[in-house]
Image (cartoon, rainbow, N blue to C red; front, side, top):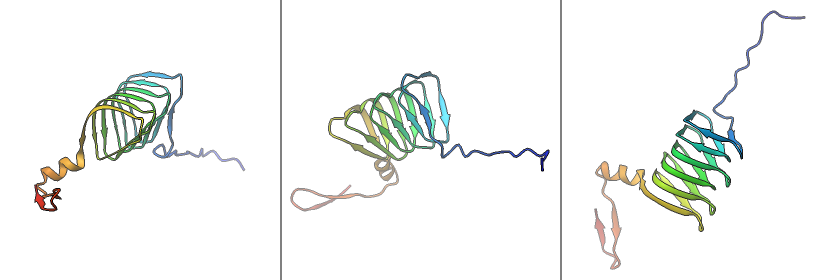
Length: 141
């Protein structure tokens, strides 16, 4: 009826969302495999393999490395995004951005230097791109 063996529960932390609530202030570096929602304030570096959402009340100062990031709040620093950076209309970004894809809603503030990793990768691989000028003539770069 009763067993001396204790069962161990294993949690899959990569699928559970980490939440930094409104009113919470974290100073320091954060590293996780799972997704984040930041509604508080973070001063430091954030590194995750999951998606990051910076809510309307969220404020991040530092370096953020992630796959996909949605910003509704404020970010200042360096964004290193492997996937898509989505800026909502209330977003305010300042700093340096490296991203594969960028989506910006009207009203968002984007004061940053931005490099698109896909375009840089294509140029570095020596791939030729072609485009048509206003006269319809194709030009190869």
